[in-house]
Image 1 (cartoon, rainbow, N blue to C red):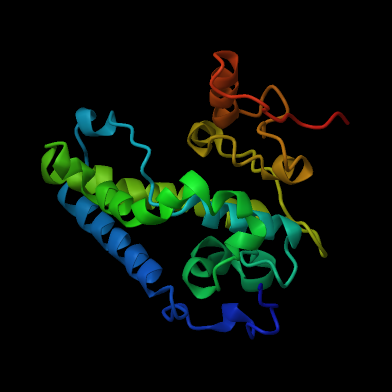
Image 2: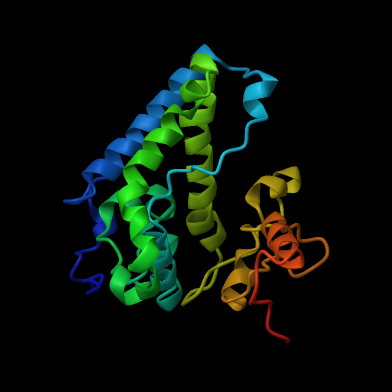
Length: 244
């Protein structure tokens, strides 16, 4: 059962260094990868091209059901006191990072029941090994300490903050009540690294759509990839924006 903002006693007022019971591991992981990233930048400020050129899928995001549950909960109560990651309620850093280790987990059976059984159970078992693989993949591939830092901690910190900016930066609109999501248009070339997630107002307007960039100038790398998979038959039932 979800706890109301009153029951959680303004969770964003909790000191930032105090994770809630059960989230100590998340807090330790966040501190660890940030510390390793600082060490990596000091020791290897310019990675080799072969390390930069490696692309990996492991970003340490955890069980898919947990993220789907958080996401659906967020959409159900966007920017209301019950929203677990709203900057309107707890401020920028609450929405960006602190909610990860200072809120109760969203109820997966309520918000993402289709992802809690069957083959999806494997993610619960694989979560810890995948995170360890994410951290040590550079060493495993024989790329040395430079590979360890750049393909491990630095890549994980980059992907973490890119995801977190969706909760913080793209919800800094001026709406006094309700949804404050915005489209962040001023990223310039960094739009390519946002994968279309910066068009967050579009996402809230068409929440079921796989396409986030609605105009020709709204770069949406994620949509281009999904469209390609659909074109070659590897994706189906892809939802598009509603006609307006």
